[in-house]
Amino acid sequence: MNGKRDINIVISNIIKTGVFVSSFFIITGIILSFIQGADGVLAVERYTFNEMLRGLVTLNYYSYLMFGIFLLILTSLKNHSIESS
Image (tube, rainbow, N blue to C red; front, side, top):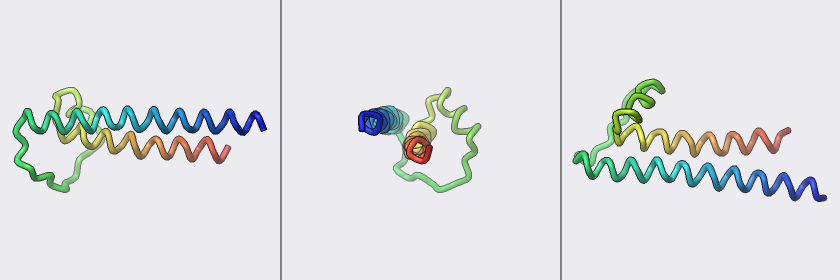
């Protein structure tokens, strides 16, 4: 029973950390969009992973928003891989 409680704490900490880090990138993206004067339209277009990473370096707000969502998805995948093992 103690082992099960420990795994629940680990999963809980992974989810909390993932949500906080993801929220940081999404909020940073929103702030950058206000600073850069985004026109309010987010077009759905092809955006490669490399373009997203380059956009993080150049402070592209769209890249920060996408990376935050990407991290949130990875958090749930990491959680699923721990539960299945």
